[in-house]
Amino acid sequence: MIDTHCHVHGVEFDADRDEVLARAAEAAVERVLAMGEGFADNERVLRVVARHDLLRPCLGLHPDRAGLEAIEPVLEQIRSHAAELAAIGEVGLDYWVAKEPAERERQRDILGRMVALGLELDLPLSVHSRSAGHHTIALLEERGARRVCLHAFDGSAKHAARAAGLGYLLSVPPSVVRSEQKQKLVRRVPLESLMLETDSPVLGPDREQRNEPANVAIAARTVAELKGVPLDEVVAVTTANARRLFRL
Image (tube, rainbow, N blue to C red; front, top):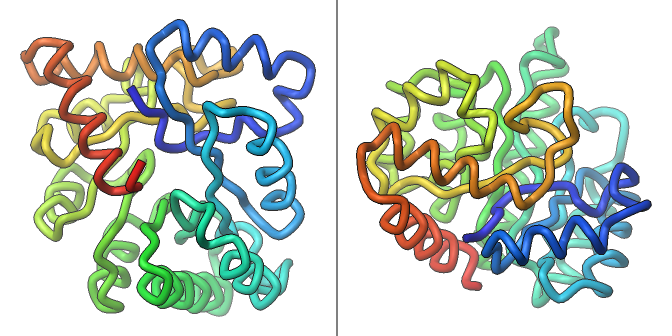
């Protein structure tokens, strides 16, 4: 299995990262994509990934950082490390945080520039979209984005199906065990459009417990139950999807 979106490079794992990644390997996780959220966090991604063969780096600028951090240094940082990257991420829109039109326009401008950079470098995007599902999909389509993972998509199953129809992939976290919205999404979207993730340390099966990459197995089992297909099929298809999208 492949954990297509997590933050295992973060300080939450500094005390026991080796043990966390050993548990992931024991759970048959073959690759973990570590997502950066801004310039300093991207530098941390690169440092941590260099010490762990299981990890692959992704550099981005989280929409929550729009207006707080300059985009130009991050764009140059991504260009400088493009050959090492599995994706540009984490990027996207977050209308839960951005309430004012000017704030939302800043987020849209940054996402648009990240789409252009992804096309320039032929890198996929790992896209965050909280309370902005159909807005995110519309912007990605309008800007011509081709290689896209919508991570932990919180929009309607209808919008998720539209994204799948555009050729975008959607990654499912372990919180699917407790999220009616994500269960509806899994039932609606074809398996051929799904991948697995954890978003560690959040979006675990238990809201109060730190999530970790080994829990991608919980997402896989739940997708199999919701789809009514064998677990082996879910693992094979989602892993093939991730290998193809991220060229792993």
